[in-house]
Length: 160
Image (cartoon, rainbow, N blue to C red; front, side):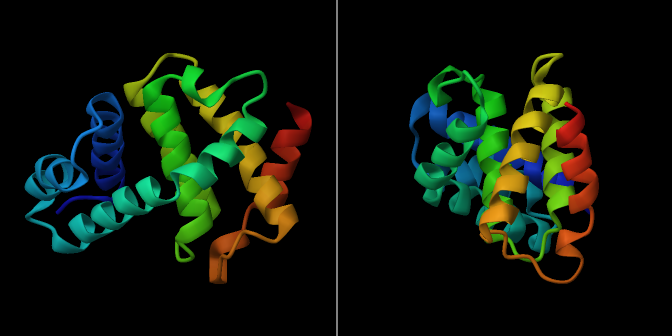
């Protein structure tokens, strides 16, 4: 049984591969998502949806990321960090059922595992700023537990 964390890691790898080779999304999906997750259809379905949604919302998420990645142009952000920021922003914008705290925490932990020593802090700062801005604009469409933790995120952003 795979976890959603593993699904996100496979999506990050697929986004990285797509960006590096500008490959065929269906071939990348098959190789980097379907094959490794075939034993867990619900997790595989989630990973596929997240990968394709992230590709589909790239222009929108890039705009949001550039707004909050102070002094960073999107193409200068490390590819893994950029992929994780796009994926987390997509979850915030398009996956109503995923609480924001989960999207933020997962992106940070995957950045710590796969990217540079400072990536976790960088991803955290950018995603927190994106989350607060989307919330303030009314663009965060979350239900149920989706907004739990917004005060803590706002406090953390105020102290940094």
